[in-house]
Length: 184
Image (cartoon, rainbow, N blue to C red; front, side, top):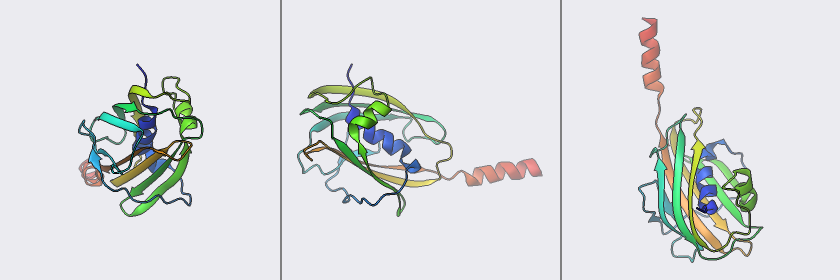
């Protein structure tokens, strides 16, 4: 079974994006979103533009992801053209209106760093499937996280555009109630 490393990169960053740093790159907001079958909070964006990756399904388990637990990402799709060294992903993560991360990642380097089935660039056109487990740190602050990831090949052709929203609810009230119960 081969993997969809392009999806993995965007979703790993989606799941752990709150931990990144700031840079001076601001991608345009997504337009023309289309849900991806599978019930995840992730949608394909910029669907009016030609894209090299056609996702047929995307599942998150648990859905929605939970702080302090692992999330398993399962994605299936077809890559329509080869992806070579020099491919990159522009990622933006917001917590509400606060921009936490805007960064460009080397796609091929990210694949190797995340040990995605030993895959390396170039990636051949074809049918791919991936299942990847990602840790969600318990320290992720509560709030609504909005992620945008646009992947491009070395010739700046759009591989895919993914966007999603994940809400990590506040647990402060429950923790405060437990603390009060212990004190009294």
